[in-house]
Image 1 (cartoon, rainbow, N blue to C red):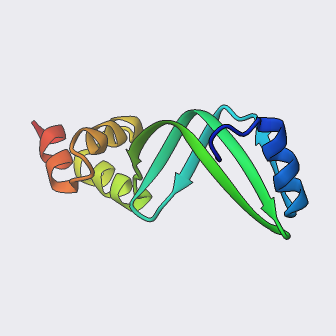
Image 2: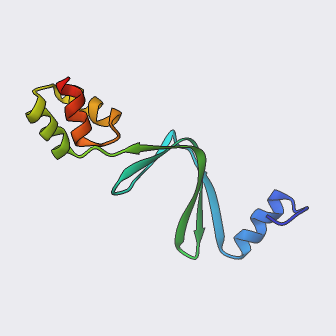
Length: 107
């Protein structure tokens, strides 16, 4: 933002330039990547629409959660005979390391 500019003046200026923004109420934002999920809690989200192109500005409390592969969970269950919940917990505790999860459950 420009220094010493009233927020209402800034909104008018943005509107003249064809830029519209609005706040979006949300409880949580999840960004799924191939390797993990980025989770943003208590997010503050602003949608910016400029000449038909939308973009989002997101801020909040960020954490990363490993994605679990269903095939990995099935393999652990087959190798150890545990429940799905136990296999998932062991896989999470071992940070996705299948061999470490199997060894942990076989002890």
